[in-house]
Length: 273
Ligand SMILES: [Zn+2]
Image 1 (cartoon, helix red, strand yellow):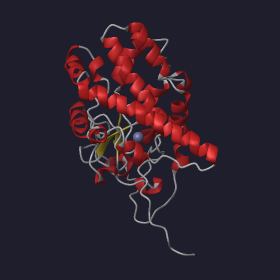
Image 2 (tube, helix red, strand yellow; image 1 turned 60 degrees about the vertical axis):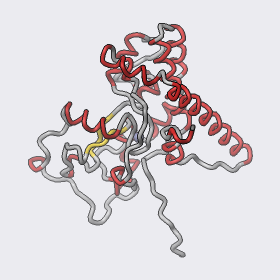
Image 3 (cartoon, rainbow, N blue to C red; image 1 turned 90 degrees about the vertical axis):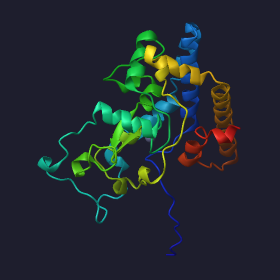
Image 4 (spheres, rainbow, N blue to C red; image 1 turned 30 degrees about the horizontal axis):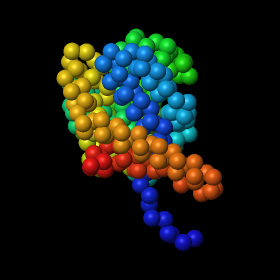
């Protein structure tokens, strides 16, 4: 057999789909509508962002993380260590989370999708319980976009393998990339180390502008012409990506989106200048 395999770097367990970015656009528009007192519009936009495609994406690899393993026992990989030897602190402290957020922004370091803190989802759920359903015990009764974009702090080297709960080893991630990774190593999952590439610089506030007094300063940012332009551009890209997929399906030539495409597209302002 010819060794022609030029390794294609896999960034995450599952490649993002355009619908995630469409849902993101809708959530952001909903938040702006809410902050402008347009509550009916906000409700409708939040409801539209609850897309079944996003639910299917997020839950496909989250339900049974063991299915995500590609290499059960890679040579020289890290292994589980005795509990007594592990970092005493497993969950990162609040201060640590803030440091990591300041570095990574509100984007998953693996797949690149935008993420939103659970606090924000709670605020939105309280205000729009019908449009933003959330039942902790029943994923199918959770708003798909808030579930998919649920901000997590992931140990790159699993805590059980001696990974520290420090800035070096913790990255911002989405729910799928954190829960789908569980206690497995990057090598078991065959994904590259997110720390080898710089965090995406995204002027995305994770909807923190909904947090209240503290977050209100951030809305000014979102109201800038650049912000509006950026969201228009995302909308356009999503439409184009969906059309390309539909055309490809018709022609029987389906070219899957790479998460690199999607990771780069919405986050680079230069694209839209
Ligand atoms: Zn992710």
